[in-house]
Image (tube, rainbow, N blue to C red; front, side, top):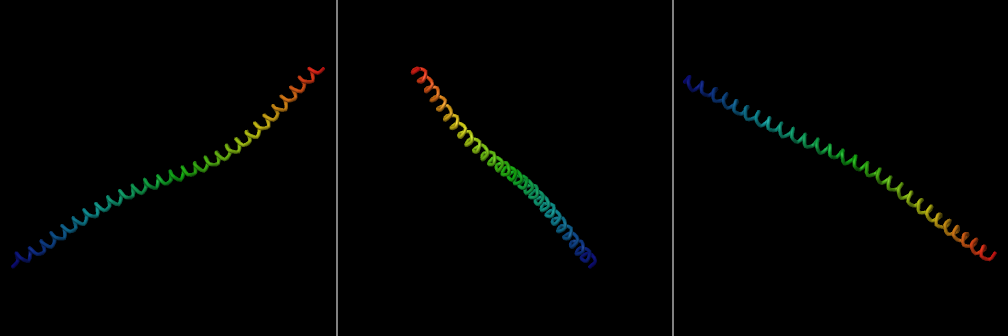
Length: 103
């Protein structure tokens, strides 16, 4: 029957087109999902770069703090020397006052 022989290739072609269309749709969906994942990964990488920069800045801050600590220690030493100098000066002034009183 010629009618039946035409229906089979048409049905097969229709099935091939349907499968092809579904496959293309799934492929486009997969590409969109993959692209979104790539965008997300790029954002996360950018955040990691920012974290690395922040860590580098923290290392600089740590060095600065060490320098400040050294400066404070130096200032304490200068302050102690200054106090000693003041006490010696005060003692000398008192001695000169006492000496004047006896003269």
